[in-house]
Length: 150
Image 1: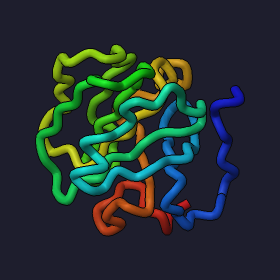
Image 2: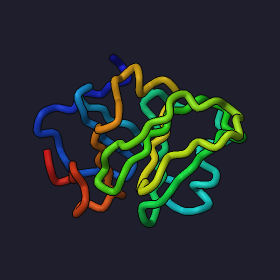
Image 3: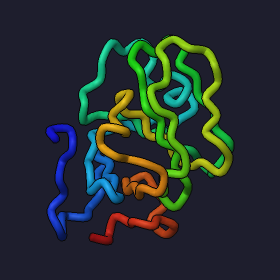
């Protein structure tokens, strides 16, 4: 699948701010990500963008684990939202959030990160709860899959 970038065994584990890796029973994948790590960036998110590359996403980074909720007001592309705990595990997933919908999408409690990718992509790739994520913005001391691990 062109959207899934295979990660070779023993791949360089040096995390980069613009790259996020996922692994699970589906295999492994890499996304080019933009960070939303300030309140203003998180509030804007992917609003008003007419498209996003298939291998791209946005990673929302919070100062501490917390309850999160999203909406799609002014968002023009359907999105999958992966809700991630402080250890980097996907603990919730909302598939195909509807464009311009103002209905709150509850991500749950103790969420430290949220990854938004193109709608339907998680199902096509087999990404599900339990997948592990690694990224440079994550607390490596807590990470289930730290940047220094293969």
